[in-house]
Image (cartoon, helix red, strand yellow):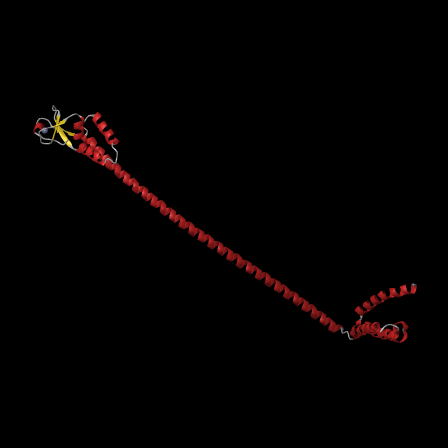
Length: 264
Ligand SMILES: [Zn+2]
């Protein structure tokens, strides 16, 4: 039991020593491997009864393992060329470095591409935004123009209306002036009554209004003493001749002269 324990402890120690030897001098390790494999193999096949008693499969696997070890570490260690290895190492390092450089370059290119794409995207977005803004402004301008046109139309309409109103007012004022002119000789009560009557006359009763205004504008003549009114040129107007509107004459209670037959 003790011996077995000791034996199993030697295995890792031997592996460690072998690895140290291999890393310091692969060629010596190669020689050790070749000799060791041959001796160990010979011992197993010729002297070891236990191994001999084993099955064919176990023997085959052990043999393949020993052959692989012999080739890899034995022959590999013996034919190890430090210069070549170093070169290979350098080459591999160089390759790795180049690969790294390539990778870095690729990443940089990718990044640049991304930046470019982002920029293009941003520009496109800005362009679209500007377009949208322009469109909106144009629409706003159209709306404004329409509004302005409507306002101008409304103003023009209002102006026209105002002009018409002022024209109507003017006409009304002229009529008033005429009526007041023709009623200057009449009494104030007459004038006021005529005003109220003209005010109370409805607009659709144009016939009565026109006849009323006719009476207002038609001038007849009266005398200082008489109670009649006359046409211009009547013989009774030789002493005094006072002009008066027909309305006022009638309102004053004057009667038409039977000789000259003035309008009634
Ligand atoms: Zn008369």
